[in-house]
Amino acid sequence: MCGIVGYAGEEEAVRVLLKGLKNLEYRGYDSSGVAIADGTHLFLEKKAGRIENLERAIDPNAAKGTCGIGHTRWATHGAATDENAHPFFSRYAKFAVVHNGIITNYLALARFLGERGVFLTSDTDSEVVAHLIDYYYTGDVLSATLRAVKDLNGSFALGVVSVYEKDVVYGVRKDSPLVIGRGKKGNFICSDLSGISEDCEDFYTLANGEIVRLTPREIRLFGFDGKERSFSFEKTSGLDLAKKTEGAESFMLSEIREVPTSLAMTIESYPEEEMKRLLSGKIGRFCLIGCGSAYHAALLFQAAMRELCGVRTEAYVASEFLTERWDPSGDPLVIAVSQSGETADTLQAVRKAKSGGAKVLCVCNVRASSLVRLCDAALITRCGVERAVAATKTYAAQAIHLLRLALTYAEISGKMKNEELALYKKELALLPEKAQEAIELEGYLSDVCLRVRDAEAVFFLGRNADYYAAKEGSLKLKEISYVYSEAYPSGELKHGTLALMEKGVYAFMISTNPALHEKNASSVAEVKARGAGAIAVTNESAAGLFNADYAIAIPDCPFVFSPVITCIPMQFFSYFTAKYRGCDTDKPRNLAKSVTVE
Image (cartoon, rainbow, N blue to C red; front, top):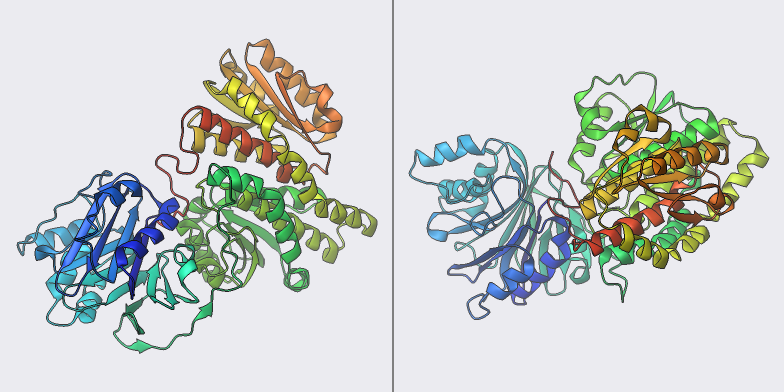
């Protein structure tokens, strides 16, 4: 969840580290800090709140040195305070450490240190790491670090600097992401390649149980056994690491506007022949795994397989998959969906599936991620970096890859007639164009949100694929605007939810299946009869059927494809509601984009 960066090079480290932390701030923004090593002592500054607080606090005359580590925090253990911010010093400030992950045995380690006269000054699990390295130091920093990490249980990516080795940064990985970057003016460690990509020409992703020693001119890799390892770099050129769209007032707004382009690029990159070979193998059943928006995208594959191919699939929230008894028999193809490829629950679920012998395909936006490396095959979305916490363009791109995959299966299995298949392929190819038409709804949605921004609650309703879309719309609204929201099948309205319909509450009805328009229109009437407001998202050809307070008309398309289009007005709805309520649309409270801890 947190972001860490380390640098050893030719430039002033504080400038490089702050730049990296700003790129990583979507991973956590409760506090931030830097530690600079100048060869004789360590400079430390850390502050609660956004990185701007840290920038104001740093004394540029004191923060001298070309080697250092930085951290931006999403709080797990301990409140978001200056004391709990990273980096952490060891006793007498000989070592400084930054940490992403969770040390599950930190209380036992704190007792061990306390018995030896070393006491923590924070409420975090991370501080014990700095003290352990110091405790084990007998003249060699690498050996001390290796001994310390063997005592740690849980997940961790670490950055370490000390007064004992000039211009040296150590990076350590166990179950939390960490990459090495090599640039013309220095070398880096970072939680995410996007944090350092502007300054790096080559990168290497650390495997579990590896530790790297960086200097400005040298990179050496070791295993936790202390033996040096060989490795090879990959080029950053060619990776999809686009930055924020110029002129947009927030990352989220620019990323909504980029949905059509992301869809077009993702369609273009779909590896059809590779997927045909994969799906031609022995597959007894399909199992989908994801968290949050990725899980909602997985549900769209479930709907498409059911409606287009007559095939039932299993879909799991990754954390639930981990706790349930799962039968790997019957030749399952597991499809794991993750924006970052570093989602802890999803990675653990994939490991569980592979341990049972299952073949795993992933859908991911980061080619150089742990998930892509772990899986047997990958569908890479072409979205560029998505910096707002809320998934927008990545959700739409995941959905279109999965819908295309369903059509591929329909083709090779003979589940669909050729002329029908050709029609669906044509309709899917038109989705980027229709998404661009939906983008034109931005101004109208802005006006709608001015009127409904004070809603006490919003209930998203839909049937079949529209219900899965409703789940995603509800998630967006609650995570960005903090408005209470839930999603329900619209057929369940009279089985409980109708009791909550009153003045100040809104029902957001999604209806894109012509066979269900009349039923959904009746539900809208029932909502309004109880005094609640109603918003309808439906096809242009059916907009007149709904007596809603606000009608949002989207281009006609097959209803199983419609969530790719309906997500756009729902994203605008969430964005503008949050904006008019004074919320931070890019960095909602208590959340981070990459959930790298369980």
